[in-house]
Picture 1 (cartoon, rainbow, N blue to C red):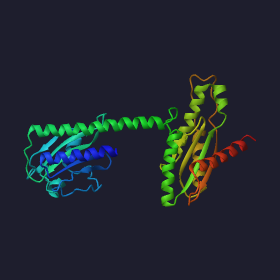
Picture 2 (picture 1 turned 90 degrees about the horizontal axis):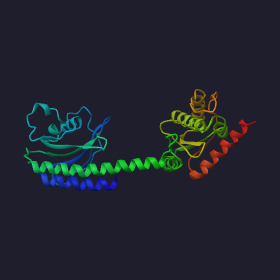
Picture 3 (picture 1 turned 45 degrees about the horizontal axis):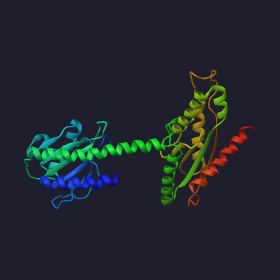
Picture 4 (picture 1 turned 135 degrees about the vertical axis):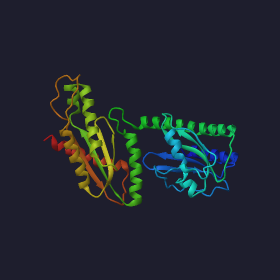
Amino acid sequence: MTASLDKWQRVVDLMTKLLGATAGYVIEYNEKYGYRAALTSQNPDNPHPRVSGKPEPLNSNVYCRRVVETKLSLYERDASNKPEWADNPEVTEAGYISYLGIPLLWPNGTVFGTLCVFDRKPTGYDDTLQELMEVFRDLIEADLRLYEQYEIMRNLSMTDPLTGMNNRAGFELLAHQKIRIAKRYHHNIGIIFIDLDNMKHWNDDYGHAAGDAALRAVGKAITESIREVDICGRIGGDEFAVLGYVRNRGDLTTIITRLRNALDQVKLTVPTSKSPIRETPQISSGASVFFEPLDKSLEDMMAVADLEMYRDKKSRRK
C-alpha cells in the first residue's frame, strides 16, 4: 500500500487546497477500535499535520461516524449551535464547524473509512466541488480494489488449497519474520515437525479422498491446538510445521499433547471411502527449542526438528 499512500497524500493535499479547507483527511474505520486518521493534509493551516495514531472511540459523536453508519455523504455547512453536534469533539475541541465527508468502500461494499475536509468557518461548497470530492473518492477506491486483488493473489500463492493452512512458501515467509523479531527482542524459537503416519495406508486402504480427509483433520487439529502467536503450515505431502516463541521445551510439549488429544476425538466420515473408517489419524512429531542468541538459519532449525520427528516415527514402529 506504500505507493498508494503516497498518491492518497497528494489527493488529500490537493482536495484541501481546492476547497480552501482548514484540513483534509483519510479516516480509517475499524469496527473494533473506532476511527483513526490514516492521512492528514500538509497545508499550513492544518493544526494537526501529523497523524497521531490514536483512534476516536466508536461511540464518539464525530462527523465520520454518521458517514460510516449510513454509507452516505455528509455535508455540514455550519455546525455552530446545533444540538446534534453539541458533544462532537471535532467541534468542541478542534473548532471544526464545517465538514464534508464521503464514504470509502472496499469492493465488497464494507466501509474502509472516509475522505473528508474540515473547516473552522462556515462553508458553501457548490455542486462542482462536491462532485470533485467524488472523483477523489473514486481514485482511492480504485487502489482499494487493486489492493484486495493483490491480497487475494498473495493468499492463493501462500495457502495450501487442501487444508487452508500456509503452504511451505507462506510458512517460511512468516517464519523468517518471526525469527527477525526473536533476534531483536531476545526470544527463544521453538519448532515442531509433524507427519501423518501411514499415509500410504490411508490412500490404499480407504482411498485418496480418505487420505485427503485425514490430512485436513491433522491440519485442523494443529490450527486449533497452537497458540495465537504461533504460525503453522503444511510444508509437504503429509508434513506440517509449527513455529513460535517459547520459554522451553515444555511449551512445545503442551502443544503436541493438545494436538494428539484433538486427533483422538476425530471421527472421519468419507462417503466415497473404499471401506468404513474405524480409526483416527495418527502422527509422529519432533520438537526442538533454539535459545537466544539465535545463530542457526531457518533451514537448519527445520532440519533439526525434522530429524527429531523421524526419531519419533522410528520409535513408534517398534
